[in-house]
Image (cartoon, rainbow, N blue to C red; front, side, top):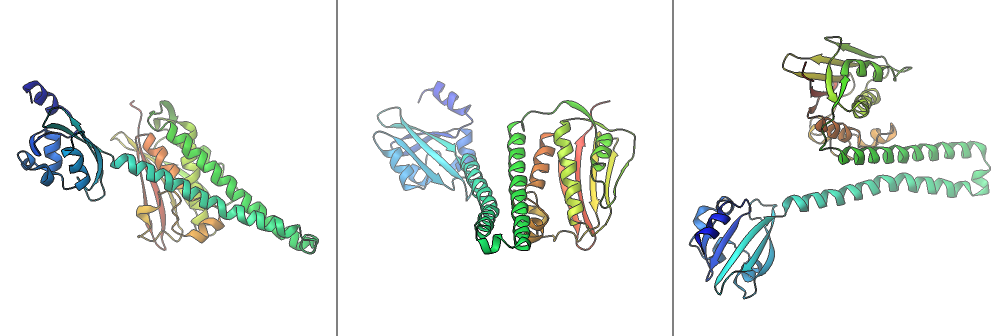
Length: 328
């Protein structure tokens, strides 16, 4: 291999090796970091302990193969071999782990969404079929009860579809930093004012305004979701407090606190996962889709902020988001 070729391979971020007569003659820094510096001079069958990959490297025409666990136990790599001389092979290693993980996440997401829609849809169909029976449909009390259930299940599907569309819109712009000037204090008062007629939602702030670079619609959705969650899981007529605290460090902390039953500690790490519910039956009974906190997390991340939930059973839950203040 020429000096120019070695120099070129050394500057590649992709792990690459030159193999000659079944032995690793050269490995760039990325390959050494992945497989260890000791691979230079080693038999390729020892450097890469995968029969299919080794067969591709040693074959006359080269080829490629997928190898599990080259870096970590769950990783997946493609070993690609190009013939560059009578006895020389250029071996490149491509990390497929993230691509496969994303594909699996998408497949899981579609499967979960389908499952969430299938249950209420089956209920709607079942009750409609029952109402076509003259005996059941002719009884006004039964008819009204069944129609109420159909309405509830249809609203569940409507809410789920709305949240799925929200997630889709958020992901479409997740790499675009929002730039509008939003006063978080004014927005908190505005959104809290939408929840009239139930338990009191109070707002307190440590200053008159706190301006950030944001997307007004998305931030309204965050506050609406968090307040709605707090009201659903708070004690009957229990208070919900929204606080806005701007700090000299250049961040604003927005908290939504309730005095409900709290979330068991084993559920806290997973409550922002899509379709995850700490209390499945209660969540569905109050109309939860299992997507609210996932939407909140995605929006906060788009705003270059941080989201966290603290909870103590029997005491209550506090959802907190930290957002960077716009420079003054």
